[in-house]
Length: 304
Image (cartoon, rainbow, N blue to C red):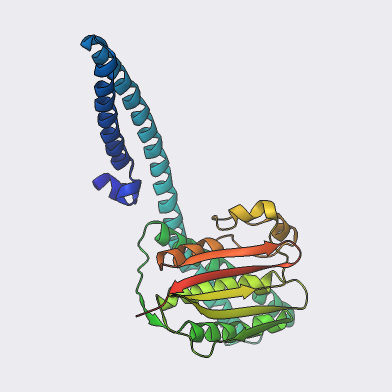
């Protein structure tokens, strides 16, 4: 258990637990081999030698596999710790930088010229982007180490969607994108963490607007399906190439056509979205066609 905590892994993924399971399988295999051997081989010494040979081979294989998993677990732990430490160390200077730029733009120290103001705006935009990236890295680290608290409660998904749309209206307007949402007549409440589901909606809507390059429309749908509430968001964006679709929920992955378009992003948003939905007891998926658009959906369990 101490080793599992050290690697920040649940018990069933811990290398030592896997070795224990393999040991039980080896014992069962050796007993089965001995039982079968005594039926077909008259000399008991040969049966014992066969069993010992089989146990030795299986033990070596189990030990090698366990050691490999241990090395992978240690590398993963070090990577997570590195991301966590670096992210927290970056947050403070970035916040100070943003505060300093905002203070200078307020002109409390004196009027600034148009050219200087332009450069300060560039600094502000880039510091905001860096702050968002750091925030995503911290979220990923907490999701992987299961330290992100999950405070489930009955919430109105419809209200959260409306709040998210209101927040992104200026961004959508500047991108010449129309957002369409037709709520159902009576949508039940879902059991989830409101702050985390809000992050999911923001990530999905941000992607839908950002990856639609020309005038277009983003359609959002909400409906009840058995014991779940089903949410869908459809865009008219660049779409995802078929060969890239199996990697879309992986960390830091960005499809080739998005990179060609030089669209901003870290490749962490969809990984965070999938992790949050699954730990909330829901499911997530998508359909996409390159050059046509994408449709992302997820379900969440309805509250009692």
